[in-house]
Image 1 (cartoon, helix red, strand yellow):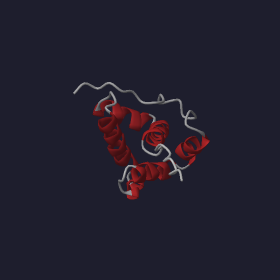
Image 2 (spheres, rainbow, N blue to C red):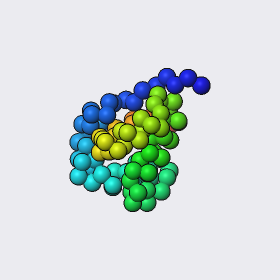
Image 3 (tube, helix red, strand yellow):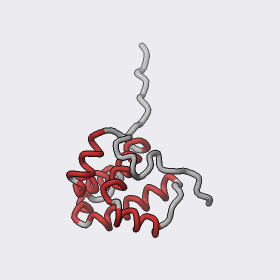
Image 4 (cartoon, rainbow, N blue to C red):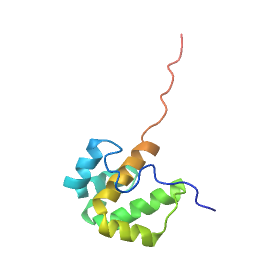
Length: 108
């Protein structure tokens, strides 16, 4: 199956999704990893092994959303730019998974 999609934001566009994810990524990196995992129905405890947890999160996002990339790219990004990639993942999770369309109220 060909990969077609890209990340909504680039790795260094940390503030594109808002200040909350950006601040968490740079000052509370492990908490953001736990929140990302929880949002993807994984264990919050992944925050205690953040690099492995982040690789799991990133791989899951790429597979589910058909985003271009490879495990080697993910390893390099997580190793050298961990906070930025955690923020990128958080922004993607919020954009894709947490923004459900509003349900219309039944009319009387």
